[in-house]
Image 1: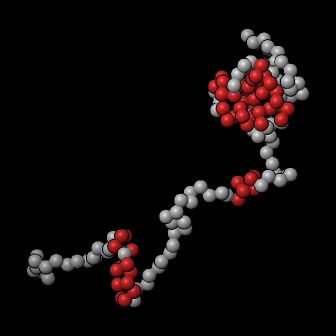
Image 2: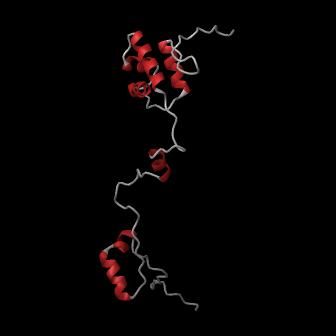
Length: 148
């Protein structure tokens, strides 16, 4: 015990194969021959472009029913927007630019497909000068005195 042999090297642990080597066909067959346990599992939707899946809730909203539906802008409001826009000589694109929205938003509101948003409705009201909400739909907006 007093004497040490500095020329011998003892390997305590041999480095295992890398992940890529362990997955290779050769490594798998070699492990099978040695009788080792091999676990194989297929990743769900591996290598496929399935990141944009339709969830159950989205599908439910798509199949809108009586008890589950989005409130939409009425056609009356759409006609008022269209009339007010045409009276001012604006196209849908001009109106959209004026209120900092996309032209598609104006098209959706005019056709009655849009889900009402009070901010957008307020911008459109101020731009065309007609009321779009409440019981006085289509009447001119009264200029409210600014508070001091």
